[in-house]
Length: 629
Ligand code: AHR
Image 1: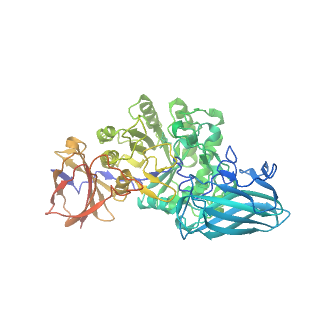
Image 2: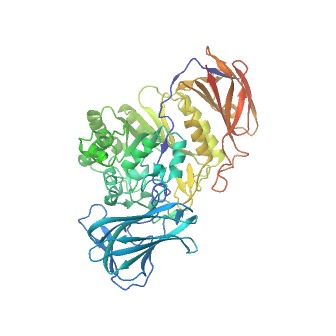
Image 3: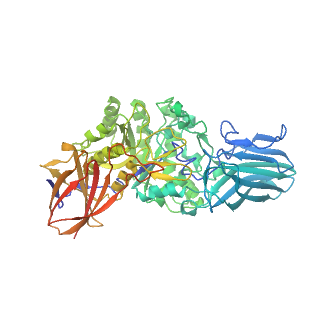
């Protein structure tokens, strides 16, 4: 029998409790949520022709790559030196092809300069059989300065592997850059925006926060390639791309064409957060490159630039339009504040070097912005000395929130459901900023099976039960592209046209859309339900909705009978709702072909007075909701 003390809430659940962590890994941004279909649109990749093919036999000197040091961010452009017939053309292969849909409109655009003649561009979208499935003609007026040309046109067939042909004609010289193709139908219909289906998956989770932009990409493999937010705002054609840190990781799954073009930059991240109702949680480089790579350090006396980046970011997010960075935000289209309340300094950095650098940030941030909570990272190895060292130091420094990461086998998640039951309630709060149950690590890439998801669900009862100390939690990584990934398991998988949520996604979504506002004690023989007989449970009360929400995990291969006794002075409805996630065995998974093997099933449930007896399905996650009057 489980006892629920509905009138004795033991703490508050943070409104930010369940969120998402977005990183540009596994083609998450470029080739993923950022809906640009052209790869290497500005010829800025290390190999400038990557993604492109010349379609003609034009002689030497026809295609010239010029590097103009006067241009900001994006210095390279293409000179077509002697455009004279329709056979001068380029083909772009997209990111593992381009996903296009029958009946939808696409916008081709470019920047161009054509100082001595009118030109025109024939644009074609081709399917895998090289059949033209959409085309248009874009006239380019004589233009001594860089101008933008754009045209929309429909595509008449659906394929995940389209290509783009761009044919140039006229007579004379034509300079081109930022050759681009976007679907018109993006998230919120924003021009050159985000992939609607991918953002929708996030919005459906109603996440309490979004942590961005990483992850290891914050650190960079070296400091030159760290994530610098200032280079990701302002006009898109002036954003300087860098090699993605995941371009070099896991060499057996190398993605050599992985760059960060920053079309999805910090402004867009803040906007995304606002769109999906999530608190923005930016993470900044602390003056250290990824210690799994070079581990380069900025000397302490040269840390000012990094600290200034943090201070300026607060101004960019929250400052009035009279401030330098607030003005830029307003000019970009958002005069209102983005309401930034938390900032992360460092990701998985360790050693005394991290503590020293963090202390410099903390001093400056606390002095200038006491209203901003600081998140510091304690790394990935919850059993290791490094983790303990950092946790002790971070607590001693009065850091507001400690970001803990765990990529562990299912057994760890099951046995860690009580991890925070006896945690020090004073001082730093916990942010479980990255976690995922890995069924196969370290021997190979993991699959998000029902086993992984159910063990996460069990662990999450412990996070919820301890919501007074665990302030936030997010699974990682968020997205994986089936044709170009470095890390697995991931929460959501996509190809160029489709998207599906893994069983872990279903678990995360069920938690985050049923988060409640108060922790309600649920016990068995006076103890938390945290693994005995492979049962796990937590309960919350949602003050706004007046609902008691109970989460139960049966990690047994057999059904288990449970009875509840709800102690309360309040009146309870005698009918409620039950949502069940269950798999026929632990190896079940979702996939592009079978996206809903694991999906929530809804059932009514009846209470007798304040008692309920129910049978929990084998290997199941059951959520019960009951209206309190
Ligand atoms: O989520 C993938 C990576 O795991 C993140 O970039 C890093 O923070 C962690 O090691």
